Length: 259
Image (tube, rainbow, N blue to C red; front, side, top):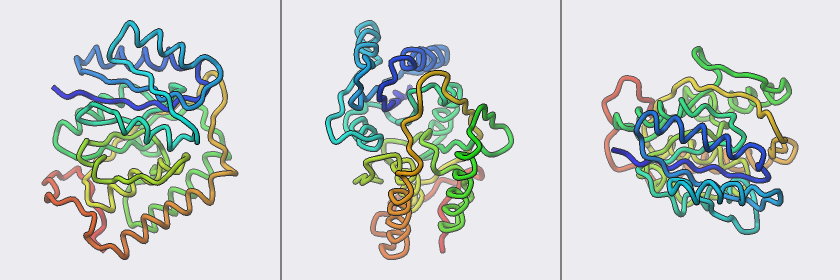
């Protein structure tokens, strides 16, 4: 039986975090899968930590970890990656925008033997509710650019909600990103370094309470830096960081473009 770690960065999410945790716990208990929910408190000032502490006192499968300055979404995820216990790790949002049922589908795919499972909100079978138009346009432009540049079939790289095996997590370190550009760094490094992956449709819904911490105008140069960094690794470093094992023979598994 697999132990699944779920890392949830949280900054001022006291209105959302309890319901987010409960929905995840409920889904995993229903499927009889052991969970290790790690909420990384990223400098919250609204009582987020107290809410999670109350839950963790009653459920040892839930933990609260305090991130220290400098704060940032990427730094919070890195903090979680330092202490996760599972055989695999899922990155999820604190605002309940990600569907816990999709987490179970991630787990089942990794139990079949693949290294990573990446969700996409932009194929048949996915449900998206309330996605802002401007954000959608920028999202599609950025993801198309990445898809073409790297020659990959995946069209939702920028979405944080993904699942990685322990082997792939260790294989993509060190992680550089301090902010939301970590959502691009983790999957691109996994792909470039030879970890196989499957793509499945996933659901997304706009948060019901609070505001998003992503500031689009602040992220352009950070995203571009990490995209170019991984692309240069792909071009110049050859097999220096490649996974040693051969890819699994799985017709639904995507592997990096050999060019």
